Length: 180
Image 1 (tube, helix red, strand yellow):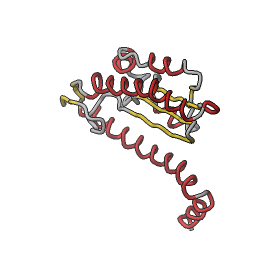
Image 2 (image 1 turned 90 degrees about the vertical axis):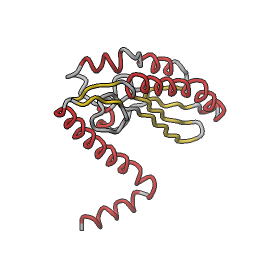
Image 3 (image 1 turned 45 degrees about the vertical axis):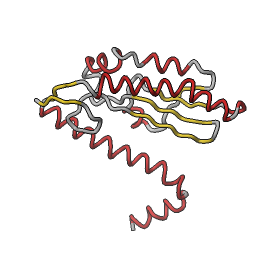
Image 4 (image 1 turned 180 degrees about the vertical axis):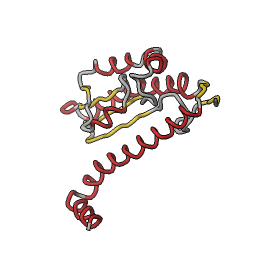
């Protein structure tokens, strides 16, 4: 067994990782993803749910954000991405539309900023800095799982970003060159 003091990317690090992603489509449109993605399969480890999600009361942060009129739940088109997030993930689309960029700034400052800070504080206090023991077998599993998740996530990101950056025609041409 190893005694750990957390740092998000080490394979022998057991607690949930910290995820924050902001995707701004325009000055009045934003997709927000805040989460502590699990490192274990939650169905198999109910104590993991208790420790990292229920005891930390993460669900209350999501509920607070959803009360803002401009905020609606965001559902990723990728089933793979949806399978990786926790049950308490904050995945929201914020659209201030006619209210303009000033309203977006207000929502970010008054609501998103404090919730993001709280989530980071929870992660630091309950995940990153707590000592945990991880057996060698479990450590090997975590390393394998993390590698698979990282590889697939990069593939999905590239698959979504490259056509937007270079255009679908160039991507198709490149794909045909690689095949031929």
